[in-house]
Length: 113
Image 1 (cartoon, rainbow, N blue to C red):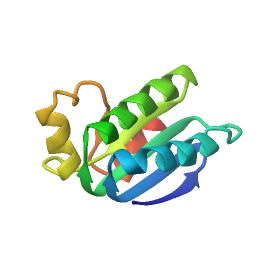
Image 2 (cartoon, helix red, strand yellow):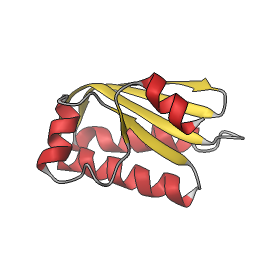
Image 3 (cartoon, rainbow, N blue to C red):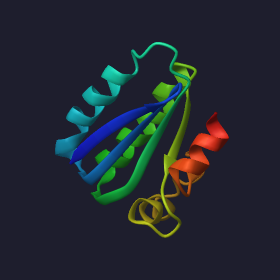
């Protein structure tokens, strides 16, 4: 798993590549928690277009992140092309209704700004 982030005004864009499996969830949560302390943060965008594999623990971690951002009063969206790996996993597990999915970072930034 590789994680990086950048700030676009008051929106944090986090890109994750590789796997998001049980063994990756603790480092992922730690990384995200450190970003939650950013001052003037309005929203999180998680770009998952480079995720190659995800398991139930990874999906649960994304659901927990969506809940956590809501508690922090932050907007949250996932970038995932229709038909992408994560999109299909969410579709299979009926999780598409839980998340706001954007086709691209540009779409997410436009809608969350």
